[in-house]
Structure formats: structure tokens, C-alpha cells
Image (cartoon, rainbow, N blue to C red; front, side, top):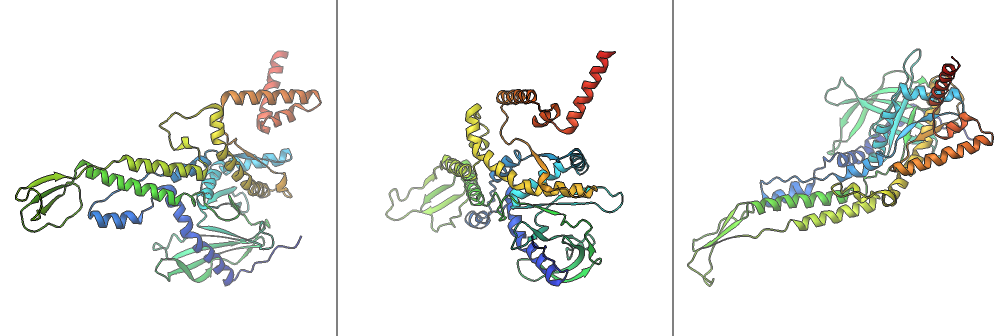
Length: 449
């Protein structure tokens, strides 16, 4: 295997980091805006307000969040185990000490929304606590060897200087397997979009050797390309919101319909479109009923047309994202049993694919957490990543499966497999097995007494 690339700590490397971070900011922020339901539709701000003057309409059904949440609810990291008791103990201690279950949940959400997420683990010298945090993908980046795309060679993270209230300065930390260094960058606005570029870098400290020889930034990618789960959703979500805004405006007109007066009065008022507006229109010379004043109102529009169109877009959203329709129709009776299993199969397959893609990164993270605790030479390939089952639990079916598994373990024990190994295959952790052994030993003492 060829040696890893040596990345120099110079201005060119720092500029490379800043360009990568600023270049993806807008794309990822757009995904978070759709997930949070804070997107402002230009068509509402411009076209509708131009037509309806001072009328403000807000219409929002945030189905983008449903697409992401339907996956994060099923992608649940349970922990790590190792090839031996010592490695497993270190993995479990790190899991507890860093609240990694919570950090992983945040990382999965960010990875699905932004197309990537980052987990940074570290431990300072001495008795410093073990640390492991999920990081916003807008603030971190990892560069890979072009010849070996799975081999990271450089990572960076930046954050605002808390002493610069105007956001004019940031810290930038750069990691390689050999060195780490922190810089402070003064920023300037150099284009109308407000994108910030570095004006100069000042080293906060001298580059220090990386004592572990591992880049401590772990990159979670649902795909090799940074593709958000919402990339196929945004146009449909915009269409739904436009329809809802138009429907609310139409409902205003239905509640207070526009009226008209046709009379012999001279002149015509400015025909402003607004609820409860009265148009005064002069009668024409050849108009039937000339000389008489006519009064009327415009008919109400059918709001069902909007709802039908919204339903069609939601159906398209369900098909494109492989999200079962009952996630969008909670007011109706949800399917059960085999029908539910069939309907959720595409979503389950998609979640398993994302879990498989996250697993290699978590293996490396688990091995690195062991290294931070002093256990060297842990092979990431020997780390076992435990995931929750993404399928909806059917109690009867689950009981049948567990009974079949237990029966298979009994048969294996008859063939010579140990009790402890049988319990491991049933999914029990080393702590649970030890607790069962202690409980059984206590019962034996009671019987002997």
C-alpha cells in the first residue's frame, strides 16, 4: 500500500479548506430550510402580492420533514462490540461517556438533510474526558486521496470567534494524520451574495503532532456524492405550498366575495382585486337594461380543486421518495400486518442501505474511541456495529421469530455451542449476560441455603 499523502500546512491548504466550506454552505442551508419549513416562496412574495396588493397569505404543509423523519425514526445506532471482552468494554464505556446514541441521532438527521455529516472524537492529555460530537456539515469538510477515494488525507472545521460580535472573524482548525493546527481568519465580504472569503490567516498556535496518527473527523455519507434526501422533494414541496397559498386567498374571496355595481355613473374606479371589494362599472349605451342600476357578486371558486392537486403532489412525493402513503394520511386507518410490511418494504430497504453506508465510518470511529482509551491496534474491521431493526415491529410476528431463534440456539447447544455464545447470537450484550450469570448464581446460593 502506498504511503498517505503529506499535506503541508500553508496558505494554499487553508484556502482550499475555506473554499470547500463556503462553496457548500448555501446548498446545505437550503436543505435545512426545507426541513424546518422556513422557505420563503418567491412566487408568494412577488406575484401574489403584486396582484392582491396588501394581502398576505401564508400556506405551508411541511412534508419535507416527514420524508426525513420517516428514515431517522428507523435508523437507530445501538452501540459497538469488539472481537474480545476488553474491546467491547472500551466500546461500551465510550458509548456511555460520550452520549453517542444522541450524537449519532443528530448526525443521521444532518446527513439525510445535508447529504453528509461529521462526528469528531478526541481526548486531551492527562485525565481529560472522552469527547465525541456530531458536527454541522456546513462547518466541517474532509478531503480524500483522489487515487483512493475512501482514504481521508485532510479535514477542517471552522467556527465563529465569540469575541467578534459582527461575525468578522472565525477560527479554522485543520487536521491531518501527522499534524493539527488552529488559525484565526479575518473575513471580508467580497461579493453581493455575502459569501465570505479569508483576507488573512493568523496561526493561533504552531502546528502540533497528531499523537494518534488518525484524522479524528469521521464523515457520514448516505452516498459518495453529497446528495440530500430532499433534493427530489423541494420542487414538489414548492408546488404544494403555492397551491395552499392560492387556496387560502381563494377562501378569503369566498368568505367576503367581490361585488360589482353597473350603473349610469360616469367613470370607472380602479378595479382592485381584494376580498369584499366593490367594482363600479359604467353601463354601456347598448347594454340591456340601460338606465337601471345592476348589483351582483362574483361566484365562489371550488376549493376542492386545490385539495385534489395537493393530493396528487403528495402521491408523487410518496412514490419518488419511497415513503409509504400512510405517513401522509394519518387521519385514515393505517394498514396492518402483511399489508403494512409490503407497503413499507421500499422505505425499509432505503434505510438499510443508509445504515450499510454508515457502518464503515462507525467501525473506524469505534476503533478510534478504543485508541483514545489506550487500546492500540484495534482493527476497525473487527468492530461490530449494532443497529436497531428498521422494520415496524409486529408483536406476534416478533414473538414467533424470537421463539424460532431460541429453538435454533437450543439445537446448537446440543451440538456443543456454549450458553454464552448462544446468548450473544440472541442479541444480548456482555453486560446483560454477566447480569444473568450473577442472577443465576444468586439463585443457586439461595437453593443451597
